[in-house]
Image (cartoon, rainbow, N blue to C red; front, side, top):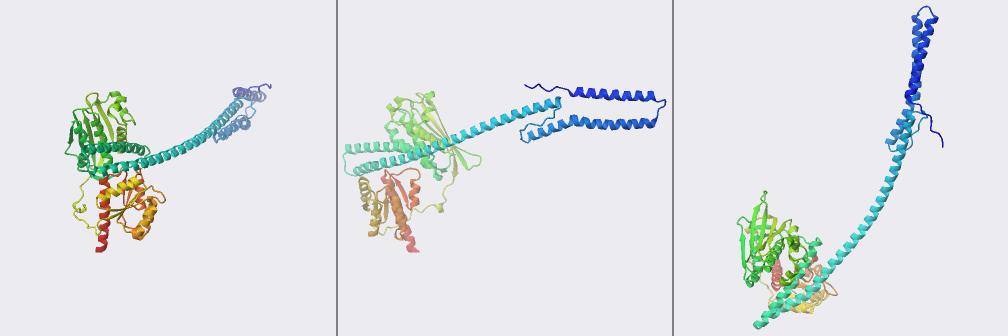
Length: 531
């Protein structure tokens, strides 16, 4: 092991040097005055010049001894500042400068080690990020695949359940139109109510899935608010009469007549809350109130809906849980009142989809009040000149109208044929899209009812082929399908269909749609003849 270099401080060096210099000048002066009997100015000048030259030389020597190592050290520091962590060259001065240089080199070595560790950690972190990213991508792909599978399952479930339910409800309607005893009619009405309850459950599950998948989009159309509230109250009126409850309503006079929004989803919110209030109220009343406040821009209104009941109420610890999926206050609630616990969950999600808020005030044994706050644009009434002229009627030159039914399910074929036949329409039934095109080639029809999911050729492809032929360019086509997921309607209209009627078919809806399409087709023919 080598010995450490001998240490000489700068202070020591400078003191020795100064003392030596003073002693030398003193000795020179003493010797000079001793050897000379007179004082010569000229010699004094020469001596001064000599001392000056000596001082300059001494300064250069001092700079070489002391300053150069500092300059070298400074260059090393500048190199470190620029990011080059390399050891600094140190002059072997055996003093504080050398010690400072050694310390600086140790600092550089520590920084280099730290940088190496940081780089290793960074590489490790980047590797973990890549691994996590790859894992996240795999998880995302799995989630997307699961979502697609869920959507496909829901679409298939919707189709498979709606198709037989369409047959059940259709056959019940057909039988109800025939002579029956009172007991038979009551039994069939009960069966129909049960079918609609099952349909309501199916719709609730599909709505919840659409909302969670982000596929439920709100419409923005102009609608009157007062008739909508009347429809909501009428929907629960039979049940309130059955339970002998008072059904009340209160509408503030400052509520706008017309709003812009989605009346279907607003009606769904209110009917869910009214139905929930009636279900859990055995005596007393259910009341729907609506107040309004114009926002500062006067273009929007904040609507405050309040649905109050005098029912069983909700314990405080259960208030927030009632808005969760498949949740009710307790098991006895399900046994006594029924239901799946989906209604309030869907209601909350629909309110939030509107950008609104919902909360409840309740006390066990004294009832509940559900508050819904929505912010909707205000709309004016339709100008008289823009309103459609409903007084005009177009006489059909061919009576009765001829309707082609493309449907692969025998029960649904019979339901549609009987329903339309009783209203005086002539019907022809085919089993798939190819047969529908063949039927159009051999006979004239005024309208086509087209199912979507059929063998050989489905309704979408059949419609596209029909629209490619100029003869059938204006032929009304109505999608009559059990597909009721988000986007099905748009897909049908994009293929060239005129209207969309989901299954289970409600006879009034189907008949109104058929009349609308036939009237529109004949109006177009009349305009062409006049032109």
